[in-house]
Image (cartoon, rainbow, N blue to C red; front, side, top):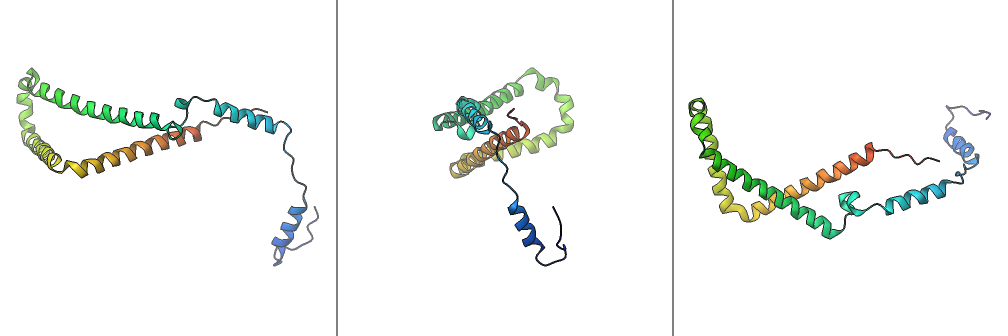
Length: 160
């Protein structure tokens, strides 16, 4: 290609555009349509549970959210039961001497815990719903980010 125009010329971009538009179009390889159709068919044949969460059927998404909420609730119940068992167990008496140094801190934490329980009982209506909404959004954000990272980091090349 002969470059007979000066780069400092005010019309160099128009000349460049003209010369680039004169170049012939590149043709796609003959097997491109076949490969694209094969990739689309493979994606369509993927079971719903192996697809990103956003593309699951609505009942499956609702069910998975309810399952997550039940798991979080179960963890809370287990925590409370284990906490009660530990407080009443032998270990509390065995560690009583070691715990003496931490009694002021433990008392402050217990007071904060009791205050949180009282607030949760009296304000739980809208605040708990808002908190549950925030947890849902964080869960969905986490699933979305994980899916995006998985798809970004897993580069699948379709062989010619």
